[in-house]
Length: 216
Image (cartoon, rainbow, N blue to C red; front, side, top):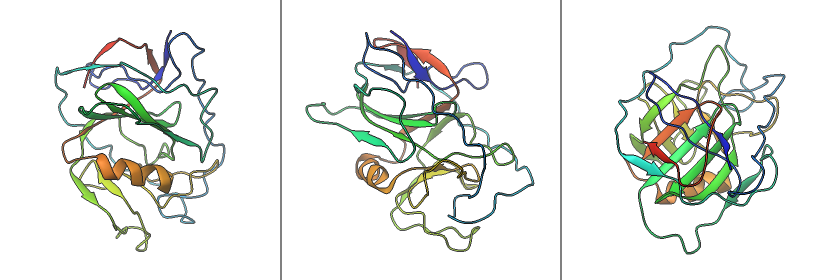
């Protein structure tokens, strides 16, 4: 059984997933917002000038084998999140973001332990495709670009402003300047276990299944 994951970049990015248990129906994508009323800083206007998409970090050939996906029924709605790490052994942490499904998944040792709907960038300020290591962790970060807006639990992916963070309105009609905005309850759990160097794979609309071997 397949499930939605993200797309590829530079012709070598691996498949990844955000879906349901093998043998169940594939999790549908949540429709993209029609109106964009906010950016990383809640209430700020979306910019009209395109910014250059950051270059992803080089990929590696390390396999990322999917051993479990969470048994989530139906699409993950805005504001919804799931977390279940009970009994999951220690292992490398890998996060995946599917731009089409608008979902972030967290895998530990190949086991999906968390999934949430996220707020993403716009065409003018896109969330970049690629494989990104976490560069830094900033518990009480604020945005210097957007009026000192709070961005708690920041996991920085690029030095020019792309990050996973909380403090966002993850609702239909809201967008970011390229960051991955997540519910505070979810990102606080992710922040607690994530380390510098952990991989975040951002792709678009591909599928794979449990047992698949993915490059991370």
